Length: 423
Ligand SMILES: [Ca+2]
Ligand SMILES: [Ca+2]
Ligand SMILES: [Ca+2]
Image 1 (tube, protein in one colour):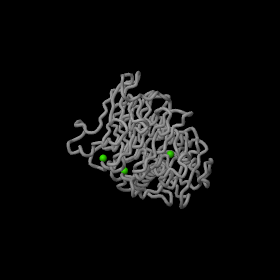
Image 2: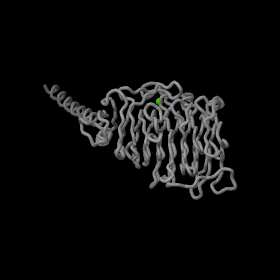
Image 3: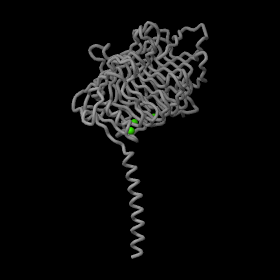
Image 4: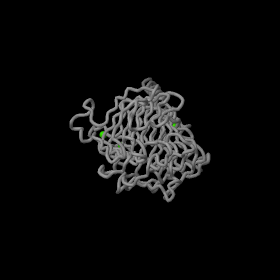
């Protein structure tokens, strides 16, 4: 009898411990919030707007998932009335869960179908913001357009954000619509960094993450974003870049990459929808760095033997630079097509405005020095001879020179330095 009493007590303790473990696992279990209403109201547990689902995910401890299956078949437009709530916890926003949506690679035979459209409705603030606490989040399968504010704002110290398989400046069907002015983006599209405090951002992946197989299969080829159809309004001013790494007050960027995206082209990889068009002064390019201190930052391929071709960015159709680096360091630019279509053989020029801008511009801003340490193509410190065919950029067909490096106040130079403007 004594034996059984001891056994029972032990078991009781064990079962209580098990209960505590299970309880704590349950309380941190990822919850899924399924959008079933395309309005922009506060919503409720039965009228689940995107705004409601973000609020719920923020309030629920631990990682969560936001899906869109409750909207049913077809294409659904969520028209914003203001910025969505800041994202303060880990969340995976999964546009491809919409009933009629399909992932697909970019290029002329793309089978991609995006069915969730976020119409910015010309709001002048950001659509999404991933702020402190949102580490490890992702956002995919959305078409964001028609805004005077930033589409995705990343102003805080975060570790881990994957932005993949989205269209920016386009409808879900990959077009600019019948009236391109109704879909265009009039602010920098992805704004990485803060305008008020120094930020450290790590493991930011824009496009293909090059893992070969996460996100439900070997879908690196499906993870590229398209950023096109930007426009700088002469009155509103500001810099209208595709991706703006903004470190005017300090931006440290670690282990991050921009890979597998199209800039300035539609998803067919051929049709130009320019970045920075119609500008009275030069402002706006596909990728722009200011004051960014990078470590292991890659634009293009890492040449590690996994998905290296899928990691190529195509950077074309910019009215000025393709890539601008102003006081930036620690950046490898490898394996991209800059100034061509998806084949790398037909010109789709950058520097179309007046032909004096180089495709890649490197310069220092007075008072904001960064030791450049920028590699364009092959570097025997990080690549082997076998990598050479993959890390080679094609920089061709542009209106201006391929690469220029200069200090801001060094002159005379044959290219102009754009005036500094606030975002
Ligand atoms: Ca949460
Ligand atoms: Ca992947
Ligand atoms: Ca790779």
